[in-house]
View 1 (cartoon, one colour):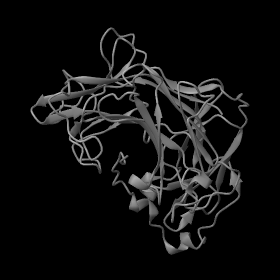
View 2 (cartoon, rainbow, N blue to C red):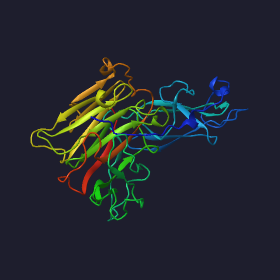
View 3 (tube, rainbow, N blue to C red):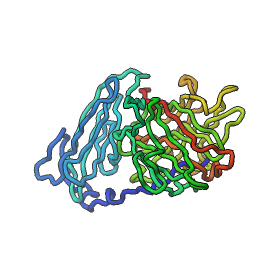
View 4 (cartoon, rainbow, N blue to C red):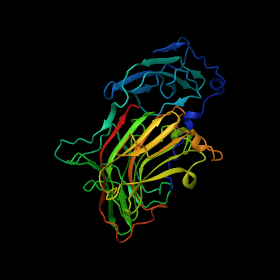
Length: 380
């Protein structure tokens, strides 16, 4: 197995605070739901919500002072500048309290606080993208949910594809033959194409900055192309990749395989963090039942609870592997990153070539497509 990413996105400006703030001299005030404390330079952040599904909500934190950095907790503790930095709207589907502060150079706001008690039963669908399309033509993936990685950086794995966003006219990208679109069939299409010999285009969609969640059960119903050099995946990364970098943010790979179908055919579920990446990562291959392949429809799922990440294919009652904090016991320097407070964003992509699969060859068909029927998040 090889890692799927390269995210050189550390936002250093958000980490630079004055000595007054770092020593706690900014005057943290009393808990509040909004507004600004007297004699306070930084206003209290705003907590707002929008509906998700079946009683769950999506929470957005907005600084009341332009340019301020928002820090937050969801475990009832008071937020400080050592808490998670707010990076994206996050799903709330369990009973908890969100607390947030905003920091500017030399100043720290009072605490904003809101308690949520949705009382959502376990196993309830609380968020999804069903890729519904009633327009009569191919359309963009929902721009309120999905954005894109683009270009041809190799993404840390010497991959060959040029990733294209919907509607892009960048070099090698085509609005006539898009790399990512929602078809009239109600599926997300991620197309691997070869516009000229040795040149490849595809797409990597992500919810980074738009939607994230912490804990729950996520499912991807998908069918993927199987041929030399293809590397389809459905996976998650911590929002804190922007400040903590990879692999400290954690990575959870739910759907992942490479190359042509085997007998039996397979999928791999893996987790990565500090001290367990690449060949030292934790990954488990699961074989499909006889006669089944990844080129058929399957539901790839992950159950994420505190201290545990479990993977399944088609049957959530029977995970094929469960990783826990104790899985790191024999890995020197390994740190479990999945309970640090961050929510995770979702990625879907079809890579071409790279360190793991190797390049396409004469047997690799272009164009080929990865199809996704839905992405769903349920309560545990």
